[in-house]
Amino acid sequence: MSDRAETKAQLRQRLRFRRASHVAAMAAWERGIVFAHPPSPLLELIAGRKVVAIHAAHGDEPDIARIGAALVDAGHRLAMPRLGESAGTMDFAAYEPGDALEPTRYGLAHPVADAPTLAPDAIVCPLIGFDRAMHRLGQGGGYYDRAFAAYPHAMRIGIGWSVQECDALPHEDHDMSLNAVLTEREWIVAS
Image 1 (tube, rainbow, N blue to C red):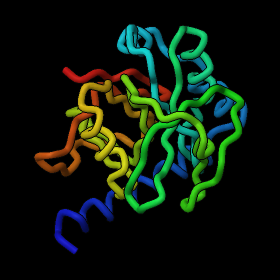
Image 2 (tube, rainbow, N blue to C red; image 1 turned 90 degrees about the vertical axis):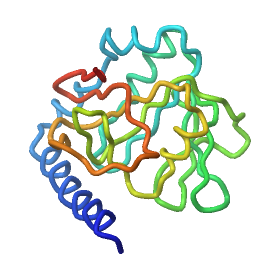
Image 3 (spheres, one colour; image 1 turned 120 degrees about the vertical axis):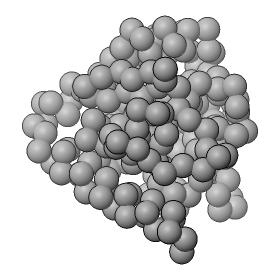
Image 4 (cartoon, rainbow, N blue to C red; image 1 turned 30 degrees about the vertical axis):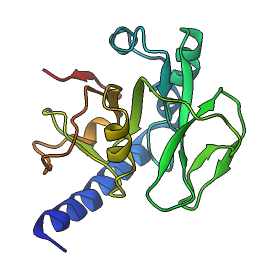
C-alpha cells in the first residue's frame, strides 16, 4: 500500500469514527430536522438542472430523503446510483420518493434493475471527509470519481456532517473537486 493510500485509509477510519460519534450524540428529534429542506443557495445552484442524483443514506450518513422530495416539488427529476454487475461500475437510475429500492452487495439501497437510466445534471454524494478547497474523501471504491468523470458537466455537491471537515485532504491530479458542500451547519461553495 502506498503512503498516500495508507494516509487516506487512516483518514477514513478517523473520520468514520468522528461521524459516528457525532451522530450518536445527537438527539433523535435533532436528527429528524436536519437536512429536512434544501437551502435556498442549493436550489439556486442547481436551478435549470433537470436531473439531480441523490443517494439513500447508509449508516450514519445524513438522510437527505426529504431534500429529494423537495427537489421533486421544485421541478427536478431524481436519479439514484445503481451499482453495476461488475465491481466498480455504477450508473444512475430514475427514482421517485417512495419507490422501492433493492439491497446491493455492500448493504446499500439502489433502484430496481428495470428503472430507466438517467444522465444527471447534478450529483449529490455522501462524504467521508471534505476540505475548504472542495476536495472530497469518499469510501475508497472510486464509484463517484468515475461518475464525476463520466458526467464532467454535472454539478458536484457533497453532503456530510460538519465534523467531517478537514484542514486539507490528500488528492490526486485527476480528482474532480466539489462545487459545494452542505452540512447541518453551513453551505460551503467553491471560491
